[in-house]
Image (cartoon, rainbow over the protein chains, first blue to last red):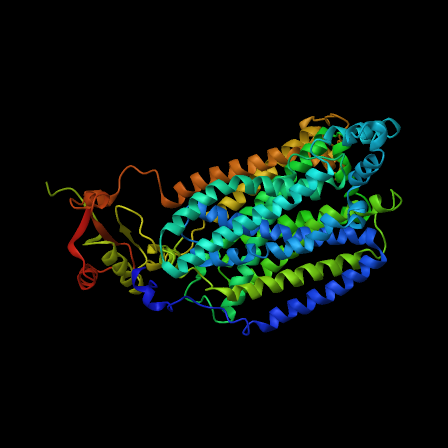
Length: 437
Length: 199
């Protein structure tokens, strides 16, 4: 109540600036991890690029989901005119600004044909059609049509050609990153500008901007997952796919937010700013998205299982074979049941020491989830259906994961030092600090 | 007039504003009273902490209510549509209920047709949990009831307008006619009234 309330007298002028030297242990660990991963990745790329393409897609998409999640929380926070999260908003702003690094890491998937060929079979078919385009009056679709006569499988691609073609895919690839970059940069700029002048107009403009940008954001999250993951098998489709991936994005970025806040507090920052109540609120959102993910994941499975249509069931048949089956069941418990039970209790959400372990578990499960979405396609695609799992290919997965997590983590934590750790002149900062829920 | 029997309900004290009420609540709970309550026209943030109220038992009721819903849906569906109970050696339940498996769309008739049952399990979990929340809450707070002793007080109706009250009940072990009254005076209570209810 009122007599405990924090006022501006308790807060330092200029906010709290993060001294990266204080966190150098973790930041350095991320850098070393990233460099080791990068060297290993180059080695795996040069020895077995077909298998490694999947590793790289898995790792890069993982980083992409974190950026999507960070953008989502910022947009939601501004669009819903919330006050509670002002204290932790700067963390999301920093998290979304790693988008450029993620883009650089993703660039090989856009430019290197050697990586694209094993991943997206339809690209190979289209390139084949482009080679034969002369015989069909310069029309790629006609050339594809001709190929479909010999290989009926291509008919599916033909019917999707209006969307699923190389030019469209490449343009969209850039647009996805551009949208996320635009969202992150605009909101961050407004927020940092407010640190300088304390003008409320930045808050109001950010709200209008977020309401508008939620729409392109939703399209980005949906179609990025369609373009990069769903089209790994161009004959497969699921209308739940975009929202399924999105649920994981929001989930993991909230877990990372809690971890980052806890880490900063352990270094002596944000101690007047973030309270038990914030942990409770963040824990509740984490819990909500645990349930939301399960709801969507089950709905997707349920509809496909019930309808039993050949093109649709292939996705789950692959993941129900050999050791993928064990992983599927593990995800059911690890991604839903365990976090659900752990996050049910209200007092536990306020215990930072326990929340750290829960968040680490959640991040690990999100990694497993993305792995489970990407990698099972590798065996059948690369070996043309001979094996489900390529022996030794997991080494490339580990290196790719280390490289991307290390580099993105390093950039993210370094970026925390660029401005105050919280928007110190936001008009609703005190309301957020003294939040009770 | 004065032949009717009366029972002492407790002392009622008025406070000027939410702040005073909040601090009064802190002092009453510190003094060790157990049977007492505060009354205000609107919810006051943090009052639970000031009153040192223990956590409600309702979440546990709701949890088991929800689980009962899951179990009901599971049993009902597996019993009427699968061979599950026979498979685990409890075939007599199936014979007792005279049920037989439903074969539909080449789906299995054993336990592994369970995805089809999830929607109902989910919905009944929610339904039972919602019912437990509503009726559990009513049970725990003792509603509905026809009357309340505090309604005998002439000043008490202000609690739904602009009055902030603390009431320490006579059934509290620490309650004494003089001690409690002077205690309420000490912590700043006004219009202190001994509320007596007709039996």
